[in-house]
Amino acid sequence: MPSWLSLYYDHPLELTHGEGRYVWDAEGNRYLDFFGGILTTMTAHALPEVTEAVAEQAGRILHTSTLYLSRPMVELAERIAALSGIPDARVFFTTSGTEANDTALLLATTHRRSNQVLAMRNSYHGRSFSTVGITGNQSWSPTSLSPLQTLYVHGGVRSRGPYAHLDDAEYIAACVADLEDMLQQTAGGVAALIAEPVQGVGGFTAPPDGLYAAFREVLAREGILWISDEVQTGWGRTGDHFWGWQAHAGNGPPDVLTFAKGIGNGMSLGGVVARAEIMDCLPANSISTFGGSPITMAAGLANLGYLLEHDLQGNARRVGGLLIERLRAVAAGLDVVREVRGRGLMIGVELVRPGTDERAPEAAALVLEAARERGLLLGKGGQGGAALRISPPLTLTVAEAEQGAELLADALRWTQHQLAGDRP
Image (cartoon, rainbow, N blue to C red; front, side, top):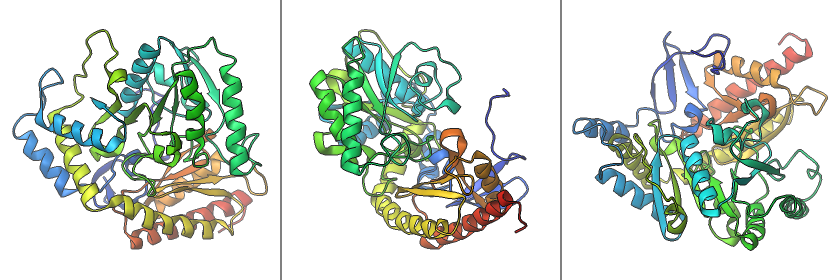
């Protein structure tokens, strides 16, 4: 395996099985999973409805590719098109969020006949050559080479940067002014703005609600497309909305929406939704060999059905709200925690060196290890990896939220003692 393959923990875990919100490692240790395979295990580990759908489909045929029709693919496309909020929507299935964003960039640049793309600072959109080129996070940008000309605008991080001191209305106005100024630096004809409503790898940071609606007004005057990267925010995870873009819906839905991760509940499933005029603009043939696979489509249909029937968006709002408040109460007494942010079951905890406002990636690494020792799995991200990322399956119970908050509080207190040179 390559040296740049990122693994968590000093002694990496081998996870062997899971059930509900828990997973077990090869040594038999049980963990409460607060990261859900980087937000992919959206409903639950080993959810019977999904595993049974996969097994049933596997017993018929595993793979056909998009060269052939597949009833599960057509049915899932119809459901997602209807849920997307995009008029006259078309859906193309891929195998990952990276591939979905890559496809969205292909569509936007072809439709607009331009390789100029606007992206947000602190963003992340994937690990392919084109998506690395629009990623505004140094930790995940291994090359400066790109087929695209990318310009980065302000707005993705509310509590840091030159506009952090402003109130929400002033913040949005300042970011819009920055966008308008940025457009004066281009050669004209920018293809698209791509943005995550909540920045995932960026540490679950977000702008004030309505920012992208204000951006959309500027973009629409220029004919520039809005791509909403919903790979991490989609399917109700934020609790308040089914899609992240709906927090910015003042000027309508995005032109293009990308999705992945949670919809497959661990199966390799992503895709793009776009208006027909955009989706159909490609002048050559295109397929995805494994996109739209019958087995991943069966998983996606079963998973989406379960999510909607059990109102997991509502559960994310209720249980996530409780969890955020628990964590904010813990953070109030800890100098190592700068901020607890997020919405629903998408929560970020930014860590700093005690007594300063400096990001502390070493603190995040310590908390990650300490939480694991206590039976809790977390993620991390943000600039330099100084933020904890909390994204458990959307079926998380109140009791599990309280258990996880207690375990994390203990890990945070231990870490603060370590950084202060004290003994816990």
